[in-house]
Image 1 (cartoon, rainbow, N blue to C red):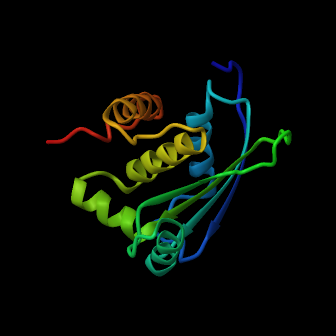
Image 2 (tube, one colour):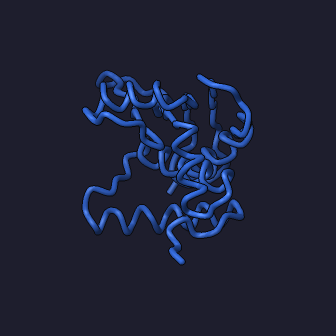
Length: 156
């Protein structure tokens, strides 16, 4: 584990109205929390998009013809290049809003969860099998609890 403060350079861009979408400072706080103890420096680009852009990106990169909540694009640096560039996250605002409402979560809590989830993917964590999923979810729960959010996987 890496100790000490995390230096995160987070660039946030919006491909839609910022109404009901968190400010860059919130995304930075959530991303830093996900990096804490895992990496000392990180450069991350976050883009918040509408459903058409989210659908196009999901179709292009994953072959899935629908908008999804978060897409993670880890940086692919040439061998031997050591930069703090972690990668990019794309968060689809309408999907996040619908999921939050459907799951009875606050919009802020769901954005925090998806930001943390996406950053963990950028750091190399995955959930391709039940063991990986369980480990990743436990890490997410801990990070979100430290941020003051409830367990995102709690089902009523």
